[in-house]
Length: 94
View 1 (cartoon, one colour):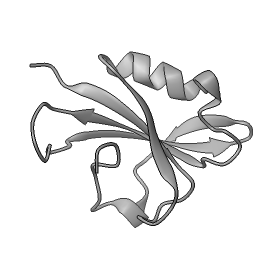
View 2 (view 1 turned 60 degrees about the vertical axis):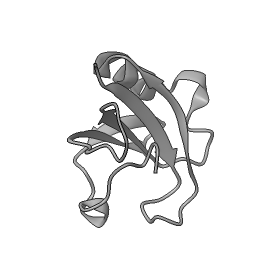
View 3 (view 1 turned 90 degrees about the vertical axis):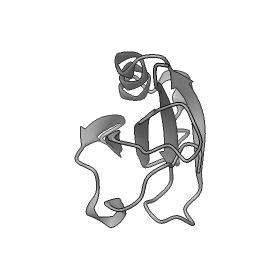
View 4 (view 1 turned 180 degrees about the vertical axis):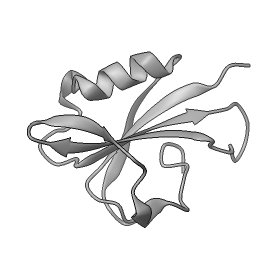
């Protein structure tokens, strides 16, 4: 079965930071387009970061692909995975 691409936005990088999963897509390109174009205003004036996780089917998925974004100058831009969260994953489904 193919993986899905879960899009999650968050206010900060700590686990206690407010965040929410805003949707999922069947392809990485479609998920990236959603974030880069801020579709449906997923930034909502408060979400500084966004992450797309390639999520396989099953329990406790082992996330291997993550694409990170940060809000800069009025748009999301792709960034390397922040050091503060280098050992964390599964933002989308916990």
